[in-house]
Structure formats: C-alpha cells, structure tokens
Amino acid sequence: MAKKPTKKQAKASSKTNLVERGLTPYRWLRKWLFRLVVIVVVVILGVIGAHSTFNPGDTFYMKSEARRLGGIDHIWVPLEDIAPVMARSVVAAEDANFCLHWGFDVEAIRAALEEGSGRGASTISQQVVKNVYLWQGRNWLRKALEAVMTPLVEMLWSKRRIIEVYLNVAEFDEGVFGIDAAAQHYFGVTPAQLSPLQAARLAAVLPAPKGRSASKPSRLVARRAAAILDGAETIRRDGRARCFED
View 1 (tube, helix red, strand yellow):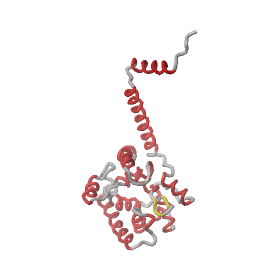
View 2 (cartoon, helix red, strand yellow; view 1 turned 90 degrees about the horizontal axis):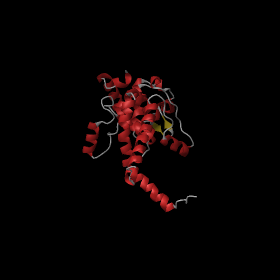
View 3 (tube, rainbow, N blue to C red; view 1 turned 90 degrees about the vertical axis):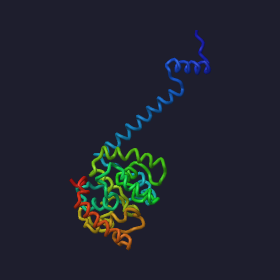
View 4 (cartoon, helix red, strand yellow; view 1 turned 135 degrees about the vertical axis):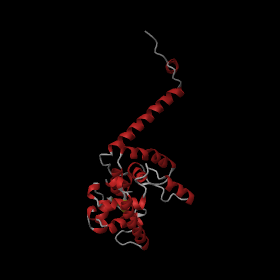
C-alpha cells in the first residue's frame, strides 16, 4: 500500500506542477486577476446595457434615506409623460452642452479648474452614473469609477434615456425623489402638467434640494429659476435640446 504524502510533500508537488505548466505564483495571480477584471467588466456592461431598456431600482442613496426617514416618495414616470420643458430646464440648469458632449464637458472642467472649484463641471451623465450605480460623497475611488462608467452609459444609452433616468432618480426635497413625486409635492400637478415656471423652479432646487423650495422660492431660487427659464427657451431655439426631444 502506497504511503500517503505529507502536507509538506503535497505542497512541494503542487509548486512543481505550477512550474512545469509555466505558472509561477506571480503569473498565476496575474492570470486570475485578469480573469476577475474581465468578469467585472462583463457584469458592468451587462447591467448598464440592461438599464438602457429596464428601469433601475431604488438607488443606494434612496435606500439609505428610506431607512433614515422611514420611507420615501418615489414613482417612476416615462419621459413621454413629462412636460418637455422640464427636460430642457434641467439641461439648462445642470448641463447646457448635454447634447454636444460624450459624457464629460471639457470646457466646463477647464473653467472649474481655473476657478479652483468643481462647481459646474459634473455633467448630467456623470450625475446619473453617481446616483444610479455609485455612492454619495467625494473620494478618488468613486470619481475613478464614475470616469470609467460614464462613457459606457453614453455609448449604451440614448440621450433621451439618460435624461429620463436623471429626472426619475434626482432628489428634489427630503425624501422626495423623481419628477413625479416632486411635481405632486410642490405644485399638486402631474409631470405632464408642469408649466415652464414650475419646471424652472424645480430645476433651480437641484443643487441643494434639502435647503431650497420650489413652491416657496427664496430670492436666490427665484433668480436662478428666471435664468433657467431663459436658458430652457434658448436651448430649444438653438437646437441644443434636439438630442433628447427628437
């Protein structure tokens, strides 16, 4: 009867087999890391691709707020059931060159760097990636993932889809997510019934939704809404709304 090899002998034999197959521990680790990266990329592509058609569920932030508040107000509504001026208003407020870039507004980034601030540099596409797939807060890992995933969203989704998702996941007040909940909460109307002024005021609260009100606007919100009202009409006239309205 053959003797059972000791643990030491089995370990040595395993190492010998790896060497014979040309797999040193370093090469073996590199091989499996490569496989892991491929799997992660395939999963990310699959999820983003699926969301070009299927609506994403509640975001990490929505779930966190639901736990904190005991619930949130959120109902998904298709872009066809939202007043077109609402989409134009958020583009005018957050990303006037939305139809002209592939996910990153280089001019806005350059201007922000010159001013020494990140204000105005984040596009709607980047915000969608952050809100739907990542987490709140600023750190290098999140920004790196956002930089990788934003072009994928631009590649796999239409501009209309990006706007639709943005309007449905944006926070408009504490516990109020999406344009349907926001229109009802502030004005008691459906998204399709929003007037240009109401749309502009809703867009005006987006940078700081917990500290601003669309129905009882402060002077700052009123001034910002007036500028958005003009901006929404401008991008309609000059064609910068065509990519999500055609």
